Length: 323
Length: 299
Image 1 (spheres, each protein chain N blue to C red):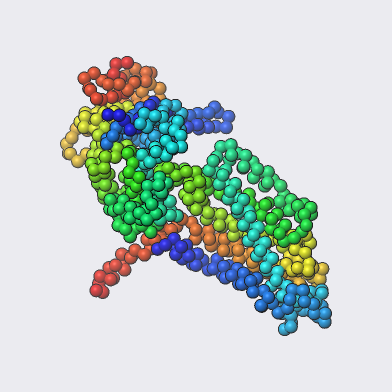
Image 2 (cartoon, rainbow over the protein chains, first blue to last red):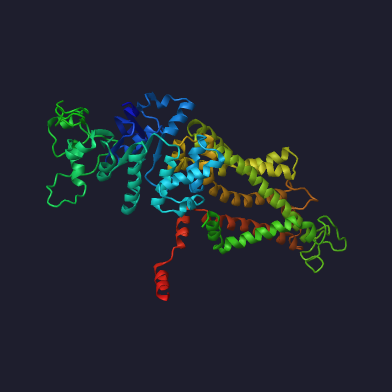
């Protein structure tokens, strides 16, 4: 199946000045990521904060240009698009942000917010705009009475529904959801999760679902990419990844997720903090925290490859791939 | 609760700002109704009462030509308001255009425009105004234009700063990824959210423009006699300050009160327009736990 969107070795570095006279340093937010999302699939991206998930999302949306690498939409580079192609891309790919308080324009009504994409793409005449918007809002569980209200009148969960409605308005093919739940209360998270999972089942829209919450990713995703310091360290179909994590970092993430099963043997939790993406450790970026490191780990960068006997799985670890 | 109601509610709680707004409203009414409320015409000369002190006949006294000071001040308020609003309108328009362009496009556009702002700021603007007026004919139109053209830099900087932070905000990025073009992003998404500081700056700017006009008229290069303006009444009063205090005190007070009122209103708007404080307002209508309990008990 042809992928809708495809990241090819995307690199995104931000310049940071260390001191006035010091040489320029680079914050290596994304260090060469390749991913693809096919029709009607959900790709989960997991990782701690600072792993480059959101930066990657912005590059995928053509909101920022990558330092190197390319993003292809239906086989063509999105950074070479002309006006018309860009417009088509903007219609096909939508985003839901993490903070529903920051992602709605406080000065315009819900109706204006949700109808804006429809007006930009000329998808509805003046007369049909209102009923159409009301219909979209209904699909995310909001009634017609919200149309003329302003964002500040809503709670976080309601706002996130409005954001989902805005993303759905143009019937996109792919929605990138950047931590859509993490700013919400747990009970509200469940409601939003239900909306997203019913969209996944019924709409045929593909998703890139970015989260640090493993349970949520497991629940929604068909495929999962685990990111660490701007690199994908493991990628595989969701069931096999959750059954048997191969990379020590993935295993560590699982171990640190709270479990309800008592007496389960504790796996080792990654110690310490994520190193600064300005000074990425040499060799495997995870080696300073890895419980299983051995001789080559601090010298040789492991490549993302398929370990023998594990079809459909990719892992960047010397334990699995001989260097 | 609608946004307007919240802003109004927050503004109306500020007594000083409301006082300032009332004073400004009175001055505007005075300016509009000048021919109906002024006891004499602005150039009417009462030859028998030259430099007479405040009396029933001339409540604020008369000047060295026997003209009624109250009447001249009432007509003079028109000049202050006209200059204040139109000069600020010019300054805000230029400032918003330059600031938006610099903040939105960034990069080279930003550098060039902001260096231009620096150059403009480096000019002692009052001297620039003096020079321009010395070359051009001093008239109210020239004054307004010159004050406007030399007063937009603060607005430009404010707007640029707002644009820089707003253009990276999620709601702008969301609109961008919905396919919104640059003009839509600037005028629909960013500018409406950047306007409250501009509005506040404009209020202070009106006060500043009134002061500059008064100063120019005081120096004799503003509004030319016999047309009255607070500044030139004050100016002619300075020669008689020891014998006819009313000639300087009343127009001086008028300038002070007007400028103070605009500044108070500006402060009030600054608080009322802060969107971070709206959230709290809209939840105030939720009943406090105690009230809810009391309601249940009484039913």
